[in-house]
Image (cartoon, rainbow, N blue to C red; front, side, top):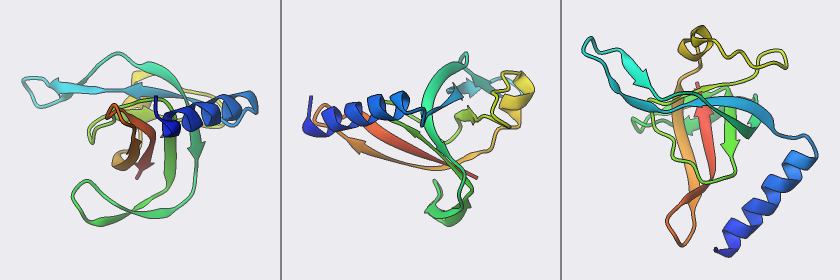
Amino acid sequence: MSLLSNLVGLADTLTQNFGLQADVLFYQYVSSDGAGKPVYAAAVARKAIYTRKQKQVRTFSGEMGVSNAQVVFLDPTRVGEFDKIVTPVGGSLDTSTTARDAAQPIIGTDAFYDASNAGILTEIYLG
């Protein structure tokens, strides 16, 4: 492991121990069905740093957009443009399909990569 991976692992442990991480549901986009509707893998419950703040970011299309929430995964994660993340609302996590379909779109991502080319400290910007 690289030094960066070790430091991010320490940050993950500390933020969990101090209660600074929230539960989120991560739905990875698989494909589209015959009618063009997206198909997602089963939801994966994850711990992440979740903040609600406005920030100007570069979107997947290369334009500037405004993100109103950020989710940070501290463990290696691949996040794509069509994936979905359901964040807590009012302190609780809604696990219904309706919540997934109403989830804020992912408008951009940033990540650091270690020597093994695994993305760590992945920040996801929600629109």
